[in-house]
Amino acid sequence: MTDEEIIDGCIKKKALAQKELYDKYSKRMMGVCLRYCDNQEEGEDILQNGFVHVFEKIESFKGTGALEGWIRKIIVNTALTHLRKNKKLEQNTDLDELDLVMEDQSQLGDGFAAKELLKIIQTLPPGFRTVFNLHAIEGYSHKEIGDMLGITEGTSKSQYSRAKTYLQKIIPL
Image (tube, rainbow, N blue to C red; front, side):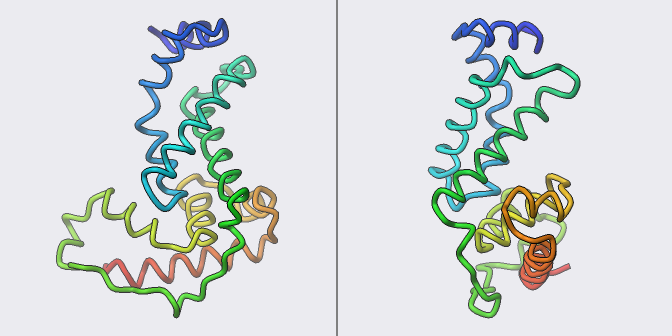
């Protein structure tokens, strides 16, 4: 099935098309979810809610950009809503309070895998992690991040800087 056929089927609320869409994009979107949350279970909840929103809003997809990008935006917004709802963005943690010990840093370097990086990113406090993901990975500006999260542009820059400092202490370059 092409994306156009999948979209048409989803608009018509056809379960087969919805399953096809979910099967095609859920693994990549789960990766997005895991960057914003603390564990697999929480990521699965965000993914499920995100796809509910995708199916509810599929008629608004205009086809001017990539379907995957449109879905990713909905998943990111779902993750941010989840963090706000659970007040995780309000938690402030000082970098000095964080445990900067990795079990075996000898595994890092050339053999450093995406899964290991994800685990390290998940150790960031939610505010740092969210701003880091939105800026470094999703490509939003600090002004856009501030608008999305209801914080100032300066706070976004500060959170990003502190996240980078934390990651630089953990990941030997």
